[in-house]
Image (cartoon, rainbow, N blue to C red):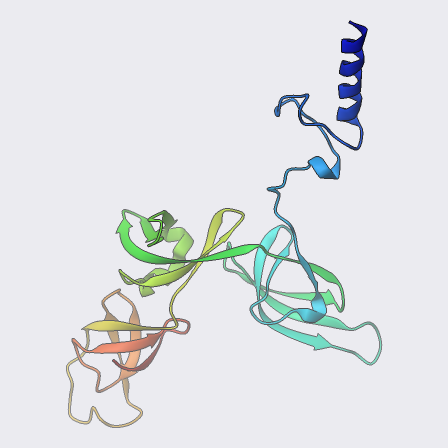
Length: 231
């Protein structure tokens, strides 16, 4: 009986010491704060110096993910150097100007990018599918915003997630679209510099040269919404 009590005491002592034993307590009862016993699935937050910030860097500020759109390193004649940036919020889409002290540490946003195919619209939701696993991701009209006018069935997109939440969709830079509405061509359509508005199959309205007609297929830069050429 004494031997059993001693074994029990040793087990309890081990559970509160630095060499935590997981074999005594059931997983739900085990409460150990030692580093060796912390959950391994917690995300690791990486950081970088503000001196290393570049356009396209994803950072986390005030608990939200931001993308660096512009940056400028400034070294005034007097005072400390700093980095002036323009950031875009992935969640809300707004942009802000923010200044960081040069050399300060900033957290990198853990953003996961996955290639998925836009398959169809289900009511007010846009459905994207992983073509290898067939897992679906859905975005509402509010979440996708104005980008919906460039969505075309079968298009492969980059779906960006942060902390398990989809925050953005990146389209191919150049996409081919069919013109579904356009003014009829008139004499002088080949004159350089002339332009007109046409409607594409997705509902987007684009400014194109006068020679583009109904039924033509054109290439559009989805980043700017500008006409590139006829396909």
